[in-house]
Image 1: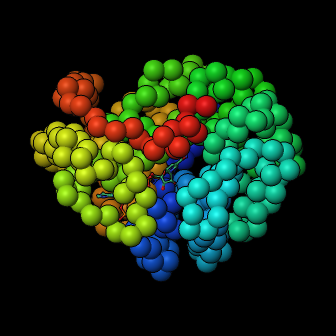
Image 2: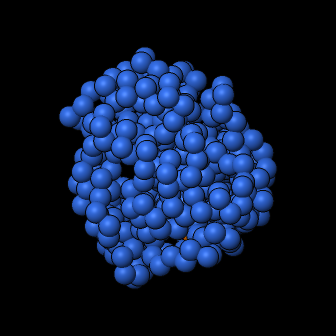
Length: 327
Ligand SMILES: NC(=O)c1ccc[n+]([C@@H]2O[C@H](COP(=O)([O-])OP(=O)(O)OC[C@H]3O[C@@H](n4cnc5c(N)ncnc54)[C@H](OP(=O)(O)O)[C@@H]3O)[C@@H](O)[C@H]2O)c1
């Protein structure tokens, strides 16, 4: 597996593993199969696992903790704090208060069964607390050896610069893919300028860009996508044309749509490490091979131009979810 430097002191596999779907959001889960996926990922050289305390809550961290204990695998764990939810409910609060951050960190360390979190992200910025205050709390956790590095999710450029002025940020994690390119305006250039890594989440558009969803797709009970505007029945028909463009170029490149979507992200910069999510071995094995697919600048341009001409129906979150992004 190829490696990439997210920042000066963090080198990881060029493709990481998003573990969220092993606990919830995308239909039924099976812990035994998820443990096999985690194990196979480590065997294939993926050493950057992404989780959060709110996934499950807290099932995802417990699952990864179990995997680490059972396997002793040498992986880098990225986890997150700040989204407070009750089990099986999507309604949430954002909390970045010092006492909550400290309590969350202790909980994550305990569930993961590790002494230090390799990368600790602010999952969502809490507008009741200045980012400088949150950063000071996190710097305290670094001094105590409980976390090694700090990351930020879904921040705007100003918040990123203010945070980075307090302590170097290792990575920004925000949704980024062929149908969600908002970060290209300000955040991605700022990351490049400041030497901050970028971790695109939902790099496959929550599975949409792989072309697997049909116009009349019925999502299984509890599948979060059923609530998302881009996956609404009225939107899927139009949005599917984006997946069709990707499928056509994938065929030309002799790869799958998922591999092409990931290869396009990898081609956007050496500091970019996508974290495709899956709970299935077959998808994992397919996605890992994306690092072998090389897209030239011209090929990226053709793909971008073809997609640019198509409308994208719907925001990436509900109005409530959109309140937490670009903060
Ligand atoms: N910071 C944040 O706010 C935030 C938000 C969302 C996600 N994340 C992180 O980012 C990770 C990745 O994002 P994501 O899981 O939301 O979206 P994603 O990686 O874009 O897509 C995941 C979906 O695509 C499917 N899939 C994966 N590989 C496939 C393939 N080769 N062919 C067909 N379908 C495929 C998966 O199926 P199966 O489920 O059937 O395996 C799953 O339903 C998450 O696991 C999580 O760790 C962070």
